[in-house]
Length: 425
Image (cartoon, rainbow, N blue to C red; front, side, top):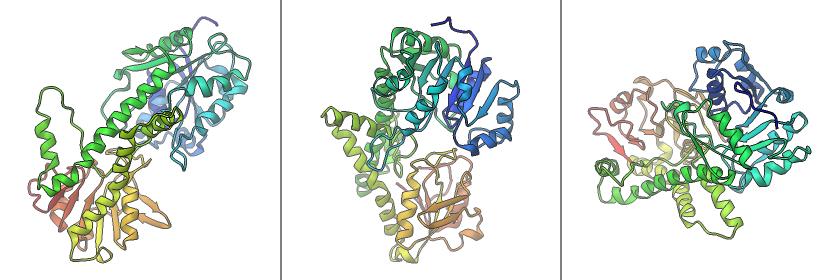
């Protein structure tokens, strides 16, 4: 293979929460980036210098294009120009909760006519161990270009945390290649933009690293959720218990309960691991148990609303839902547990209003809901406020003051002085 460049031409496939920040980082370090996304809406917004991600303001999008080194489009012919191809596409579950790699396969197949000798292909999408070697490698080698000789292939798990203050370049970058030369090439590319590299022995180890990180979170959050009922029965605040336990200077990490686990990774990645384990006839009972805990959470929340509002029946009640995205301070709705809770409330006959600063409209089945302004007048007939996502830019004291009862699943009202009418879950 040819000698590698010091400033690279990078092709990034998928310009969502992972791909766009990665493009920004490579641009900041003096590289040229060709961004590809089959979603024409995203490309049109970028070309108009508009943002579709809550982490980016318009001026930040404009800055991406300031040096004429960022080129975006929906076609793959630009791949012929690049040194490095990074795949950052979704890896959801299918209708049977099994890995759905159609976007990875589609991206790889679209690359084939444009691949050339000397290129590095890196998969960053969360997936099961073996994807690079068992799935991607045969597709890429169908061109006649052999991995480890004419082209390189590696895996590097994304570690983006939307809505957080972590700077991407300071998040250690794990990488594992199919061959030592593949690993070396990938390390060289990423260490040009990341402060710390973590080189592992194979793509399988790198793929498993991502699943371990998110499965650990999944198990611990699920455990906290499983404690909610017993703490309620014993008249104990689980939140107070967690804060007290968190004062131990070693051996304890804080994880918090919530209405369920949402997002593109934490509720999905453990099921990728479960699927791969079953393929090898190995059981992972912890993940099965956690899955059941989280599947039960929407019903638990709705039951708590019903219990709180008795003697009124649910079909006589108005509930104001605060926050519908899967986590605070982002506009991402993927796997949002709020949708399942609202659906159950609607099926119970509840009149549901909602407010979320990042989401103006929701479609739940055939029902379309529009966000309502947070005003005292709009809260006049509300029986209960239900906090499902704890966005930072919400005036929590307003509905604590103007609605009869607040069910807080995130401890978002912790800084409100008088919260006698707040029920913590």
